[in-house]
Length: 243
Image 1: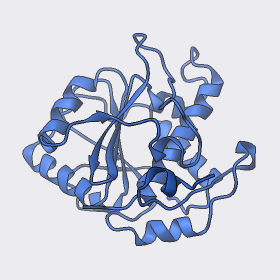
Image 2: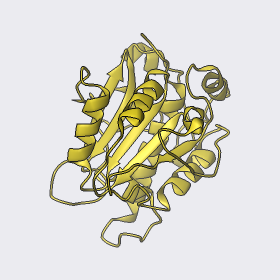
Image 3: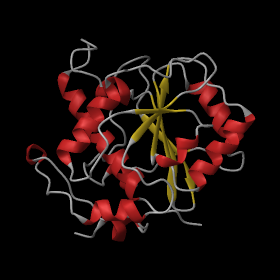
Image 4: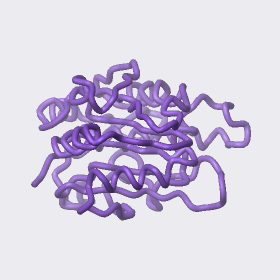
């Protein structure tokens, strides 16, 4: 069977993970070397982005700790176990390869933050935005300010982000129900690289939280959400900056 790079024609490290329970092969040692030598942000860590506008950027408090724990247990990547919190204007921004944004309300960036976000993404950073219901309109407005010439498009189901470690042939899993809409994954590409990934009507962050936080969500959805999160982080730390 052809490798990920052969199938999709983009410069990724071939990845095979993870916990014995998943039935997948262990992650290869070359993965961490690839991440360390990739251009752009290089620490194997996740930072939650603080933003203005009134939205609850701090929502789903157990989500990132649980995702970091899953990445540690299921891969050989030396992941930092503590969630970071950064603003776009912080000097530490470029230390982090993966920025996570969530919330239910308004998100608003200053002009200086827009410039920094654009620079961060062009230098190899990865932004994951998870609409926790209510963020959609303001996020679409703000990301268009950052990339007015790059439309946000639905990410094809064949893209490696759905297949690197775990297979999601129909795109992101539907974790938490709000208004009956299907889960979708949108993105902005810089060259061949998916730099912004936006999960809409999926609510991955709810799925990453402790089982039982949302009694109406079946426990198996927690596992599906963690698997998609492992895919996201693996892609973020192994993708290459291309023109």
